[in-house]
Amino acid sequence: QEAPQERGGPSPKQVTLQGGALCSEPNPQEVPAPKGLPPGWTALKRQHVTGERAGQTYIRFYSPDGVHKHVPSVRMAVRKDAEDRGLDPEKELQKLEKARTGNEGCAELTAFFRK
Image (cartoon, rainbow, N blue to C red; front, side, top):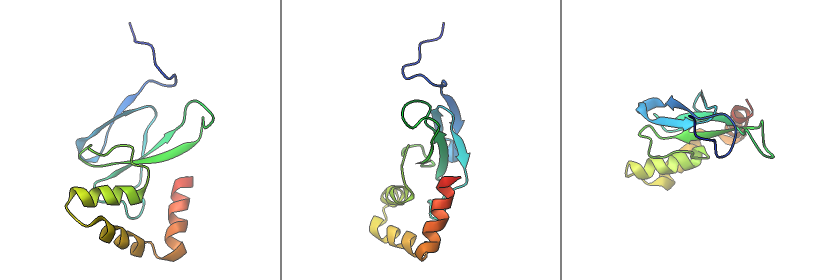
C-alpha cells in the first residue's frame, strides 16, 4: 500500500546527477549548464506542479558531491564551490563577472532561463 502524498503532484523519481549524487524530486530535467557554473555542477529544470505558479519552470543547481542542493543561482553556486575548495569567494565571483562580458552575458543567461 502506497503512503499518501503530502503536497500532491507526481511522486518523486530519482535522477542521478554528475558525480553520482542523487536527486529525488518530482519531474526534474537535466539541462545544459549555463556559462559560469562551476565544473561538475548540474542544472535541473523543474516545474511547479501546484499553487499560483503551477506550470512555470525554474532552474536549481546541484554540486557534484550532493552536499549543495537546490542552489538558486549561478552566483550562489560559484560562492559555495569556492568556499568548498578553500578559495576566496569574492575573487571567484569577480572572475564570473569578467566571463559574463557586459550585457551579452546577461542576455545569454536570461535566454537560458526562458527555455
